[in-house]
Image (cartoon, rainbow, N blue to C red; front, side, top):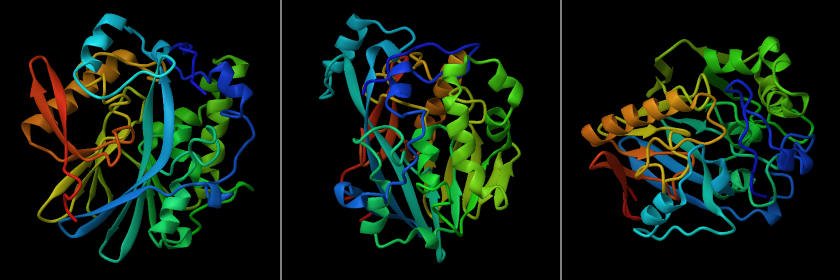
Length: 326
């Protein structure tokens, strides 16, 4: 399924018609463990300072060219010709990654994948956790970069219970308020309210063990929350301080590594504030390049670990070698 509707109303995410028809924003709420035998676990672990990080590939999504707000085919072709990314049916396949961080006897997740909300090509994060030998009940904390279904869908089981029964949920107050604002919901078309329904249902079981972040600061021991607004109002990155080393988890700062590093002002339909998204992206990529930060992101090509390099007025991505941190 290629998501193929570009419209937001007043800058708010609108669920695409094709997605609504196939359950993207409907009533299919199975967790990744449901039918896990059919899900192929894809994981990559590495050591960073005093932390063990495991990248969990939930699957891939086709990002259609029509989703880019200012798509220019000639520019895209020029950029793509410099690498190995290829269009398929006018779409680029982008990964959906989640993260397990084990540190100081604690287990923490950053984002939880899609479960079965977004089609059969996703939903493998639960199988990845199982392959890593980690039971859902052993997760202490879940940090959410934002409450889109490819990040929060795996929070709940098919019956709507908490998939991580003992975990505290940590998310930005601004993000929580956006998705729980009835006035905002009333202002979007009825057919587009599925995003809000999904968001509320995915986080509901955690309401009694919820930490709402007020701006930047400590999100969990060793993790600093960074405000990265634009994609959603409360979109948040997390900086891991692993003693001698650090790692920036930047969420959805980049959706297409193939295009948006070279063309950082290109935004997509699911950015609630495209102008602010582009500003935040440039500011963060500038910092990552200047500080030589190790970075990872939900839609960077698996295993999603590398550095940002300045390249003229834009940027390039240097992936870490496979053996990094092993």
